[in-house]
Amino acid sequence: MKLRRPKYLVETPTSAMNDIAFILIVFFLVCASVEPEDGRSQVIPRSEKNEDRQTSQSTEVGLTPATVTIDGTPYRLNEFQSRIRQILAQKKTEAERVVVLKSQADVPYEHWIAMTGIIERAGGIVTLLLEEEQTVNLN
Image 1 (tube, rainbow, N blue to C red):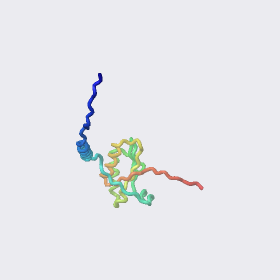
Image 2 (image 1 turned 30 degrees about the vertical axis):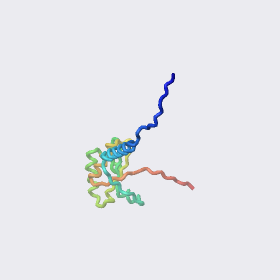
Image 3 (image 1 turned 120 degrees about the horizontal axis):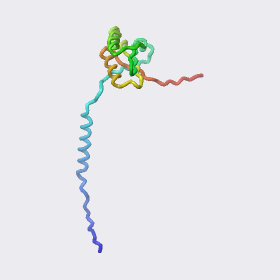
Image 4 (image 1 turned 60 degrees about the vertical axis):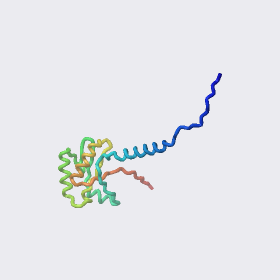
């Protein structure tokens, strides 16, 4: 003998679901915005159209995992600090204090941050040298 189940016309209450979803969204937005930003703020100078004039005035620093160079001359860390201070102390204008930083891809982030910090404390303005692709048409 089969038992018949009664069919109820009752739905699960969903009126509070909108409130709960809204509270969860607000909670996660508040938690995400409280997280402090890591890193160090850095002012990057804007590029100029006349790059030849800028590179002739600026100092060029090269970073590899093992060495630091200033205009092609390698230095140890303690020598680098004193030498970059000497070079930047002689510069008078802001455009002369721009330091072009060439970094290899395998340079550790901590090394890069330490070197840019030394340059900025010495009074330099760090700018990055990015590789650009150029198309050459041969006629």
